[in-house]
View 1 (spheres, rainbow, N blue to C red):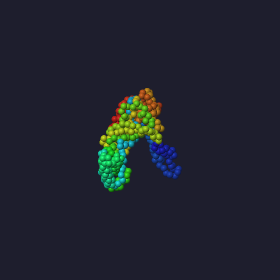
View 2: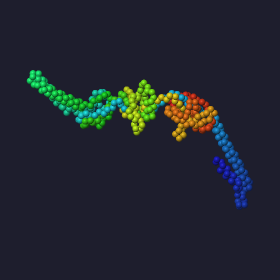
View 3: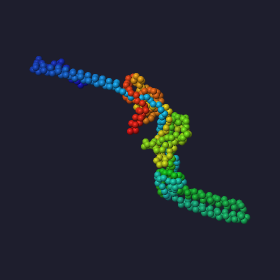
View 4: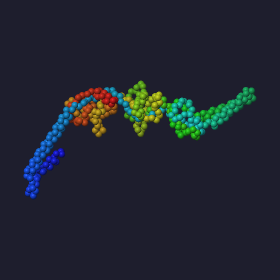
Amino acid sequence: MPLFPFYQLINTLTKSGLPTEQAGIPINRDKLWQLQNNYRKMKIYFSLIWIIAIQLTSCNQHAHTEKHEAGNFMITSPIQKDTVIHHEYVSQIRSIQHIELRALEKGYLQKVYVDEGQAVKKGQVLFQILPIIYQAERAKAAAEVSFADIEFQNTKALADSGIVSKNELALAKATLEVAKAELALASAHLGFTEVKAPFDGIVGRFNEVRLGSLVDEGELLTTLSDNRTIWVYFNVPEAEYFDYATKPKPSAPTPVSLRLANNQLYELDGKVETIEADFNNETGNIAFRATFENPKGILRNGQTGNILMPVDLPNALLVPQKATFEVLDRKYVYVVDEDGIVQAREIKVGSEMPHLYVVREGLAAGDKILVEGLRKVKSGQKIHFHFTEMSKIIAELHQLYAE
């Protein structure tokens, strides 16, 4: 305390005395007596202050201890009920149809009829490659068909009159068929100069091709996505896969929800329709595929999100998360007996819910646990408590965080 050094100073001065006349210094004895008397009074005064300060500190500590011992702590019992939790998986969003559009013929890009991101219909022309050469080849093939047809008709007339043999008629017919095949091939090449949409969809980004550029056969022009239905792929660990595969299968596919990148849930639920054939040996996961309808076109190919799959937990034992504490990555609760004695007990958490834990081991439905004031107690301490139903605590938690 700050009073103690000063008290020592006063005591030292009074005990050591003052200069006297023997030292050759003239001293007024009345003033000396008055000064020594003042020192004694100051000594008594500071001693009294020191004693009062110690007593006040002791009283405050005693009052604090009494207040702590008189505290009334809230306890509750775990609730056991059928519960549904959601396992969350990182997912990749894919269009039900997503293809590359490539040039089928070599030539100059003559026309571009669409823009990136545009919605198109099945059969709509997207690109036109300069068709002059292919038009000429088709015209030549058409002329050869006409010539072969005339030759066939003449040969047929002669054969009907018995002038030529049937073999010559068959040869003329074969020549006509070859000419027709050449015309069909030329028509196909001409048709390949028009790149059309094979289905309704949305045009992707152009791949460095612009009007007038020379494109090679097979060169990538753009992509086309059908987003009316979306496939969402997510990886499930092996242990959770067995839980899913061994439980009785419902009549309808398992419904799932999709949380988007903005942390909002997609407005429509999807359904798990298929599971991949093989596990990934490196990760120990297997891929599930869920299907979502996309009538508003919000979802696009390549997006990411999180799949929320419901899991039923019959007779789950629930405790508030705030009633637990951790020591070296292990979770504990304070169990209170009938005499109000608290004891720490380790628990095993099976699943986590908002503000709640599903306890797998360590507690029974009839146990009483401390809910608040965990830092104010220790094992073996006796407390005063009042009991609150777990259902009321859960309702208050949901109301608090909803607000």
